[in-house]
Length: 226
Length: 245
Ligand SMILES: Nc1ncnc2c1ncn2[C@@H]1O[C@H](COP(=O)(O)OP(=O)(O)OP(=O)(O)O)[C@@H](O)[C@H]1O
Ligand SMILES: [Mg+2]
Image 1 (cartoon, rainbow over the protein chains, first blue to last red):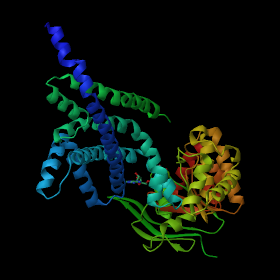
Image 2: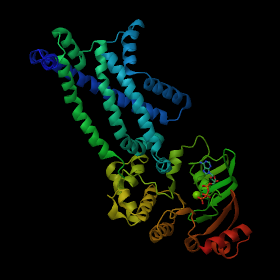
Image 3: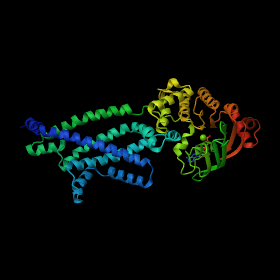
Image 4: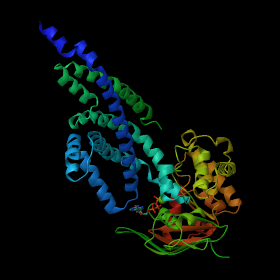
């Protein structure tokens, strides 16, 4: 067997691929579900934190900044492992899926909060003053005047952050979640052949390449146009 | 008749900076008071204290009988009666002219969309911009934007309007339209406090001119007197300097 044949047999073994395809497809959809859960939870939680921070209650803001810095500083894998192995010790059982979802949501929340906050502070003070001078209260001003402008500015940076963090779903394989990478690794162990990893890489491309292209489109579309 | 604005002994500190040093300002109903003075003399700060965009350090402010500095005063309700127009317009860039004017009607007066838009349209008509209702601020000239800002304030039917250098950010050829809108407002009987360098407008329309310097009211009187025969040396110097430009 030549080197080339060995390479083909290792990474493009069609029989093994056909065998493992169903598992990878399942992993694909599990990754999609996990990613959507993370995006929804992370972006909403981040927005809530930014809104609370805008209220300007000192001790609360210190707490928010601490939490945000914490989850930006810790490697996502460390958070996943801590939640998965640590929480049961505290009497709280969490599935691998749950741990990955919670951990990556917290990371996305932290980064998103910073981006939202930057957007909110970038809206000129005159916008607040104009609205408040007509008798509109703090929260309605934030909701109707400031956030729409802030969110528009945050769309490009938020898009790239969100894509980066959802790719972290691959880390869930460490806590036995059969998402794409997990399913591929299981396939490798089962068939004693790395070809399922090739399938896995393909599955990631099929999932994330359109997202990256969409992200590029969003970034150019919403980038400073005024 | 009670004054619409009755501000007494207003002091304002920004940290170590003593910006207002005991200013009194009263404005009677239907009166137009013009405030002039060198840059940094505290004109904007005084105006912003009147609707509590700035918190005075001490003093008392009654607007239309409402104690603006009483913690129990519902500040949002009180502000409905005080319209404010800013140097930089501050229109909401993501809303049409109509949306800009209608927002407070919906959020503050809790009007339905149809009612708010009808009233907003009427306010735009008063500043001769009925045909620009669906334009976004970015599609309007500076003068038009400022007139939308005036419409946004008068739509709430305030008891007094505060103008902080409403024409300073405008190209000269656009100033006239804004001054015209203010003149018409005055003819309709609006009570107004105007900070501005438009001395021609002050001469023609003001009932009283207040001269401020260093956080104090140095002099006040009818425009004829302040411009023709100012008592204070600093007033004289200021007016000479303005006239030269
Ligand atoms: N938020 C603030 N914090 C600190 N200092 C301030 C603040 N706002 C105003 N000042 C200071 O207060 C003083 C008065 O400012 P103000 O804007 O009231 O003057 P003005 O008479 O309106 O001047 P101009 O003609 O330039 O608009 C200035 O020295 C200014 O630097
Ligand atoms: Mg000023």
